[in-house]
Image 1: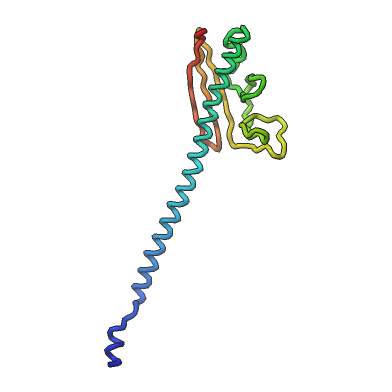
Image 2: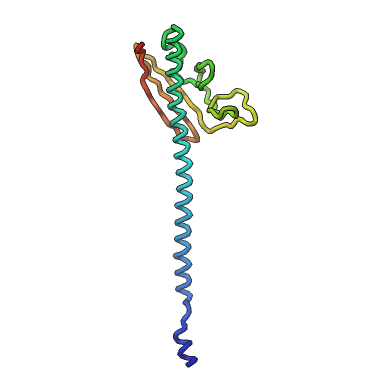
Length: 165
């Protein structure tokens, strides 16, 4: 009877154990790779979304300057016609463009808005984003191109503004 129990009570062989460990290792490495890729893509998509909003904001800044010129009785291209090599601008009291120097945008610690800050405080957060606004005036229209650059990537937006007033 003891011999019968030993014959029916077989254990795993070494080959079966190696095969099981191999299958588990391949599964765990595959899952780890998928999670890592997913996290990397999530970071890229988040940066691209922020870049798209910053690019659209560049268009809106240009449009606000054009509209302010109309309200002030000035030619609609004032302050915009010198940006064919690139300008920087953000929403502030003056709404003016300055020559593009490749400055990084900061997140202002007081209001959480992306801005160019010449003397950042300890709480201002330097971002990885730069914004370049290029304008190409024509007779009654202006092509506005905005490029947002970050970590070797870039995002472009283009719009045509008209002198419809």
